[in-house]
Image (tube, rainbow, N blue to C red; front, top):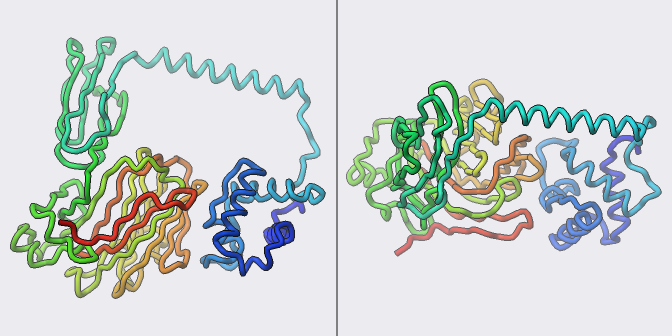
Length: 407
């Protein structure tokens, strides 16, 4: 085959393992197939992707095709189990050894020149946080040396406008009293010198609210118990008004947040949860329900809207930022009268969003997201959260929460 032939590949795999028709395969078979592919190629294809390939998962398009990484891995695997059936075209033109050596030499020389030029242009400085990840509240200690920089140097820590760093000093402290992920920026008046993150994590979930789409003005609830009902998180409008002082006639969001060093990659996990925001609970028109997954290098964020309100929908996956105002995000405009059963799957730089077990949106991205460090729910008005499970790339459960009330 000179082209990628998915049906032929599936046929070869079925014949090789002799497990019967793939429509009858169970989780056990997909686990075993995943292991076999890993052993033969050194690459990993998740069980979720294998289930989609073999028709055990619903997909949004009739002529489903996996991503390029998955295609290449399948080709390598099938060639390893049936070497006589080449599945990719071999180029008729090969570089000579001399040309190959010359190209490598040019590349190495170019890299050396770029590194040298960068070192010549960038002044030396030191700016290090000794404890960037710690249970909130805590004080982060920064050691620095900016004595070789001729311009004035400042630092921004998400709390204050800016703090001047004296070249005669070498230490500065900042206290983080609320859980969150905070950007620390080192800069002069002309350019940014360095960026880093501080993770002030929490031992439990925290609820709060903020004005319309102004999440930077988030305020934790004074009472962290009133929204913890049996089986759900739900901030009732009466306590919001009478106890928390939220003006219900204004546009506001309620939010539930957990920050933690999960030590699991956001680029290869699956998350399952259920949310509800409708006329009986939400108190706002064009009901909006969103989830944000924060990595130490990037984020995933998406929000569902009520039917016919898709201009308010949004999606961000790493560097890809989409808005319902100029992009067709109609799959995120859904009937919201009942619970939404949501699943997020990331693998091989691809984001997959499922609603009630059906794939409704796919988005590829380039820049890695890093390790998972935060999970946020938010609702226009007030909504409900029930059940959360998060699995790693081996589909082993590493975090779950049933949202029952806690003493």
